[in-house]
Every structure is written in structure tokens, then in C-alpha cells.
Length: 79
Image 1 (tube, helix red, strand yellow):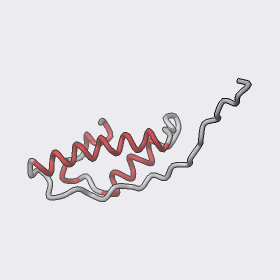
Image 2 (cartoon, rainbow, N blue to C red):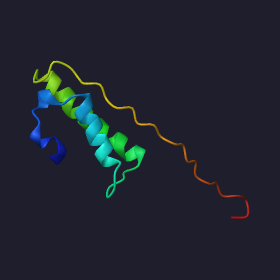
Image 3 (cartoon, rainbow, N blue to C red):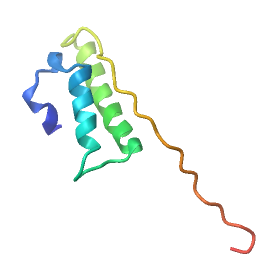
Image 4 (cartoon, rainbow, N blue to C red):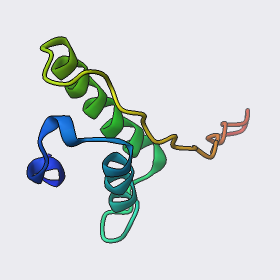
């Protein structure tokens, strides 16, 4: 991910992850909360691998992304 290119893996903390999430939510990208959660899950997998390889001591805290439930409409019997 280009955003994290200027940081060493051990430097990535809550504030850096939060900055990344804020950037994803801003125009021109303006990603949905579900897309942001996918990005965070990928970052978490990478950092878990770094922890397993002892590059970092532990995982940083991750930003909570709240999602607004938008249920899809159902077809009725006529449709």
C-alpha cells in the first residue's frame, strides 16, 4: 500500500492506521465503510505476519469502522 511506504513496519500504530482510514473516506475515493473494513483486514493480515516473523512485538490497535445497515429491498409476489 503506497500510503505506508514511508513508514517502517514497526512504526505503524493506531494514529497512522487512523490517518489511512480517514484518507480512504475522503474524496476523491470516499470508500464505503465495508470497503474500508476490507482494507483494514488486509493490513491486519500483513501485520500479523510481521508479528509472527518477530519484525514487530504485537499488533497495534485498529480503528473501529461503524457501518450503517442498508437492507436491500425484497421482491413482492407481483414482481
